[in-house]
Length: 199
Image (tube, rainbow, N blue to C red; front, top):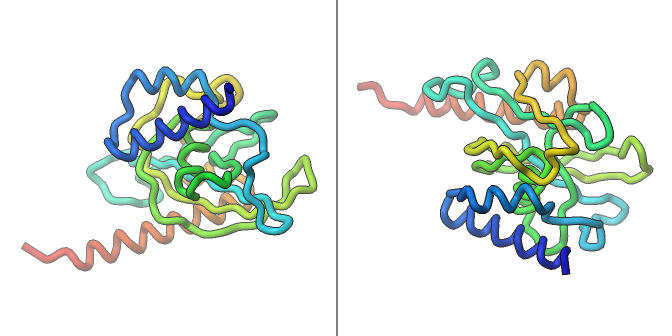
């Protein structure tokens, strides 16, 4: 019953947020109580690879300036059982889209919501503690709200950090995803500037 209830809450929260782009404070209080998913019985696999999705949450230091390495911060979270820093990610389940799973994991682990952007790519990595191989997909997420309470608040530390610091502390495959985000967004910004007509 509890797991069924949790799934319904997660689906309601995500569908409500997407349809209105608002995150009411009443829902914010519910989010802090219930982690949306538990167990791995609905987990997706691609042969021997466990499918994992996540986000690189970021925000602008100065909203009036364009995207650049110096003008953004990314949100790192600690691992559940240690102090290693990473970006939020977790299992993609068989009743979710890739984007919905990435948003759910980011909400549960980091306590943020925002605008998800185009998928960055695919990476393969092995768990440190298990022999499990993973196929991971990452998305940029421009953060619009930082929640005070979230499901894994008591298990994880979160920290806004520079791109440079994130490159130092994150696992290699996440550094590659971050570098791809920076290069893609920087290229997009330069194209936007070139295409802007002079007045």
